[in-house]
Length: 448
Image 1 (cartoon, rainbow, N blue to C red):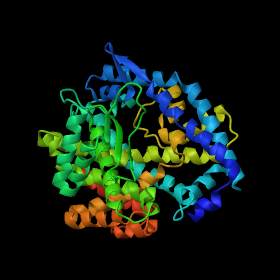
Image 2: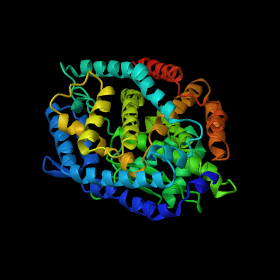
Image 3: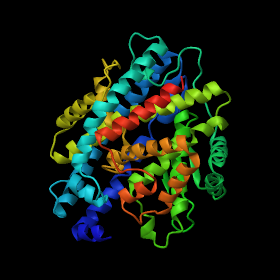
């Protein structure tokens, strides 16, 4: 509250009102994007299912269609982002900051880490995560029997193996997730069941629907609302249990006396969701009929835990550059983006001939438009979630109790204290990242 008072400037009220409206335009623009595959119109989320198809020519065709559709709106998105950037910069200047990044760190309540810690994280990803990513892509190339691995190959399965299809509609996704959570802990299943009864779920992708997924706490009932764009893939299962973890956090913190107590740091909020992804994996039997399918699902999930780190580092590093250089040209923006992207792109993937797609690749990231600088929290939290999963592998009941004990505190403790309540250290140093990534790799290897 003191921070909010310190940041308040009356001349920022109209700017922030404009920003709140402008940020919604990303969803308007993106929600209109569709492509036609085999005569059928699909949202981009629905079309992305084809990138898992064994037919390589279909994957390549759909990959190009999705990217070419995004390029149709590249100028509109560039203009929108430039306008957002300038208004955000003015808000920072009005408040006495030299750039929006420093203002935003204060606004987000980042009292426990700094921009230098973020820089350290970027370097740690290059040192300790990229080698594992390269290994995974080499294995993927070998599994697919390819001489070169292209971007449209990374989600694919070998010929003769059908993509995982864990559910067919939102009703089935809801019921299977409730069953999964029941097996993990009945209280978790009860939370989702109550949301279903109250009509607090909007899960399926459809034309005109804003992209992304989120859990929205509702203060009066305590039962939050989950929004997402499900299309029948494993990623949708991950999203559902992820948002379900956020929902459980909302339920656990609801009984706290003051509304302000329920405004917990994003880093611990993402521990709630990402831990649930890992905790729930042993109970994904409700989604898959065979032990082989379950093994494949776990493999894909753990691979994703590793391979998402470079993208997070790319987006975060790009944001630092953007707001440190607010008067940059569109050409300078594109050049800086590509340079940073190349730092975190695996050399195993052949990206030749895709320069235009890559130049505008940042435009698909919702966070840049709607919630600036909110993204590195996910990786800090991912490390916490891996730490809780390590606990879970040793003693499930103890790990779940640590999980609940931390989430029940809401925002009544500092971030390091919340991590401590979960039996974790608030540490995302290179040494900590190396240790946790090695644990994930060992668990992944153990599946084979």
